[in-house]
Length: 284
Image (cartoon, rainbow, N blue to C red; front, side):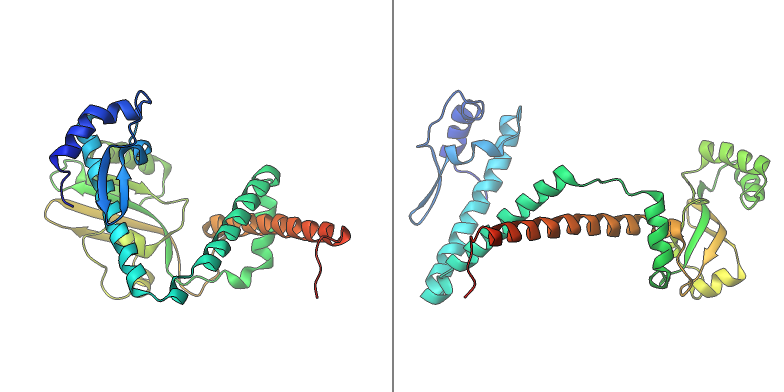
């Protein structure tokens, strides 16, 4: 179905805005029919955002009706081509319903009881106890990245200071970069994958990243409109121990999930033990 027919559009204009704001509920306005299945206007009242224009409503409705028709046709085709055993999905539906109910209850139970604060001490302790698991598989760097228009009058000045570590030169660079640079990223306090940094450049460095970074701490490239300047302040190669600050978010996620799973396990055990003590189940 590529477009709503004229009848549906007229029905939409005359009744949709009434139906969406609760002023009218005409369940007999038919939007589509597939064999013996009908889609009514009352079935779609909740799909429209508040305050939407009639033209946007028509686009949303057209897409919804088209998807509904496609789905009904697929169901009809499946019904005709599957045998009775294949079409018996009662067990799968019950399993899905049970899993969904358990998931929703556990999520609500955890949300009400779990402390979501992961302390620095917990993170550092986990990192120390599991350092053998924190091995870099990629080259990571701390770096400064600049993308400057070729015609900038400050380009030469920026070239003279962007590798410097002196406070005065860093301040000069910041002042100039914020004025003229198209992009200025200062990753001096944040480890990033060198591969991610390379994506900001017009082409890859010569040879492997490791080979290049072992002999050079700066990159200068250009394309038709820009000059790209990179100064590598720190580098760690694949195979080295990954630094704590690079792993912090991952560790927080692991600790959070462990805490969450512990609460869920305690809940399941408590329910099981309570039911056993009350003779609410029997295992034969």
